[in-house]
Length: 447
Image (cartoon, rainbow, N blue to C red):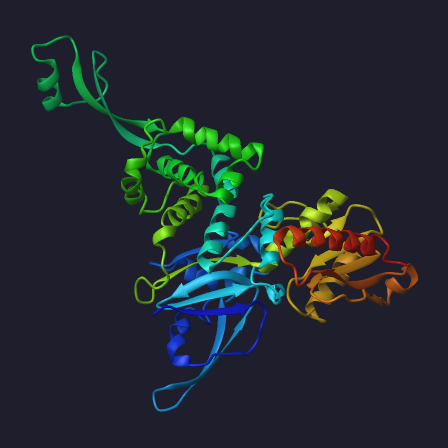
C-alpha cells in the first residue's frame, strides 16, 4: 500500500507517527543529494542539473535530516527536518512531497510554480492539480524547453548510423546477401552498407517522441509555443527526424536506456533523462522496486536567486555567475581572490544585494561577507532579500568604521508572498504588487 507524506521546506523536527511504516525514508535521509543523484537505479531529476551552479553547494544538502530512537529492535520515534530542497521523491512504498513553506494556506504550491514560471520564462495562469502525480508531470514539462534549448545550443546531436545503399558508388562494406538478392543478374549496382554520421538517431528520435507526446497535453502545448527559441528548437528536431513513427516509441525508449556519454554533447544527457521521465510518466510509480528512488527536486535557494534576477537585472543590477566566471569581483590585484555577490549595481556608492531563501540570516558569516562586498565596491547599502508570508518592516543597521561617515547600512528586505489565494492567476497578480513594493523600498532605502 502506498503511503504519502507532505512536508514544508526549511522546517525542523517534524515528528512522524507510525515510524516503522515510513522508515524506508532512512535510505535517502542524511545523505547529500549529489550522492543520491549519482547512485545507480535512482531515477532522480534535480534542478538545476549542474549542482555546481548553486552557490550554497546544493549538492551537499540533504533531502531530509532524520533522527530516530529504537527500543528492542523497534523504531519507537522518528523526526525529520527539511532544507531548501522542494519537490517530490519516493522510495519503497513511501511517497514524499516537499512544498515551499509558503503553501501553508493553499493546496497548490503557487509560489513554487510562480518562481519556475519566471525563471524558465513560461507564461501559465490556469493550473489545477488534483494529485501530486499531475504536479510532477507539470514540473517535468516546465523544464523541457530549457533543457531542449540548452542541448540544441551545442548543435543537433549526431551519431554513427549504418545506412544501406544499392548503387554504383561503392563506399562501404558489400552486403553479399542483399547484392545477390537484388542485383543478379548484374545490373551495374552493388548493395553495400556504410557507417556514417546521422542527425536522425535514437537520441533525436527520443526528443521527437517527447515533443509529439506533450503536444497532446494542454500545459505542454502552451509550453512548446511559449517563445520563438523553443519553437525554433522544436522545428529543428522535427526536420532532423524524418523517419519518426509513433509506433516505434517503445523501441526508441529501449535504445536510450544507456545515458549519452558524448564528450561534446554534454547537455543531451539531462535532456535524455527528462524525456524518459516524461514518456514514462503514465507508468511512473514510486516504489515499483524495493529501495528504488524516483522524483524531481528543486533547489529553493537557487530558484529564489534566479527569480530575483528576473526582477533586478532589468533594473540595471549585475548578477555574477560563478560557473560562467561572469561578473567576477576581485578583492586583490592581478585578479586575486575572486568573489561573486548575488547582485550589485555598477555605480560607485551603490547597492549590493544578497538573496536569502533560508529563514534566518547568519549574523556572522552572512554579515561578514556583506561587509566585505561593501568595502570592496564602496557601496552604501548592503541588503538581504528574504521571502515572508507576513508584512514586515524593513530593518536598518548603520555600520561603524568607514560606514559611520558615509552613512553605510545593512538592511533586511522582505518580499511578501501572498496567502489565502484561490488561483495561480490571482497569486501572480498579487506577487507583481509585492515586487513593485520591494523595488520601491530598495531604491528609497535612506527614507
